[in-house]
Length: 253
Ligand code: UDP
Image (cartoon, rainbow, N blue to C red; front, side, top):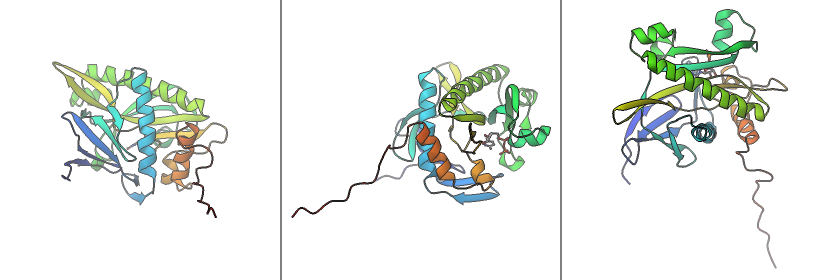
């Protein structure tokens, strides 16, 4: 069989050339990194869970008219997505203070924010993804003012959808990160949600107990990461239900 052409290898995913022009295969690895890749590990099954969870969220977004790059899942670890030019920003939406925002502003983690707050970080590992303002983004041409309006509207729609889906299964969406891609339809360009949406890129807290069900379990050594992601998937109805043990064959005399 012909070897596929690798386009890009990231920390948690690898991208391969897709079967048709304008498509890409996104492969989810089991690698976990945190603190700008200072902390690393391989967590068996993480890629499979993120592939499934990202499929679920992206499909839901497509269905309510929020455009995403997702086309279809191919197998346990791969999905077919639309090729796009990634805008070099991490778009973060926060509903409750946590992580870097809590540190930066001296807020207690878990404080509800007066309204969702959108932040932008420049995607640049060497610089540690610094926080930037709309002024920087427009002045340096990373995105136009029109793009920024579209990005804000996409980010808030994703937030409403994700907050609702999570609330329905007893989980608080504290914050999340999305990436946005540019696609061209003839003379027009539009922006779509790209990359992944998974517990690697969201903060998810159980509403009743506050238990963390996201990558902070890995970042802060709080327990088993696959257990946490499996809990999210099973609450969403994505895991096989009931007794999944295959019955042993019995000898018939
Ligand atoms: N996030 C991410 N990738 C990054 C940085 C942040 O997916 O490179 C997500 C992170 O999981 C959280 C949100 O964006 O859900 C806000 O992250 P924060 O800036 O608080 O990051 P921290 O420095 O605390 O990881």
